[in-house]
Image (cartoon, rainbow, N blue to C red; front, side, top):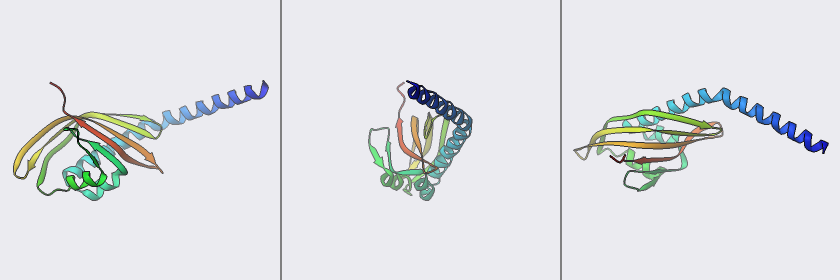
Length: 149
């Protein structure tokens, strides 16, 4: 019985230390993720495919408003298309939640511009999933949907 009690006390102590560490890093991590979201949004608006590529995991997947999905290469090809000029790309009230090496960002998104000379405008809801891998935060998945009115 005694070794079992020692194990439980050690496990409790390790859990407390982990929670303290998590509590201390969360605000910094949330700020980091918010900054990376802004960097990604700006890179998209400017068709900066190098920056977008650096922020996306190799197995990144995005689900867009019509239900289609694209991997990293397809998303970057679409984002770098010179026939689309993005005038406005902005997140509204993004909320970051961090749990260990995973961060979830939710919010509203507004985009306006021209594609092939024709104006367009989107107002969506989004969910982005970030993971920390080898000390670097990357977007693993993204989902956009049109809010029901």
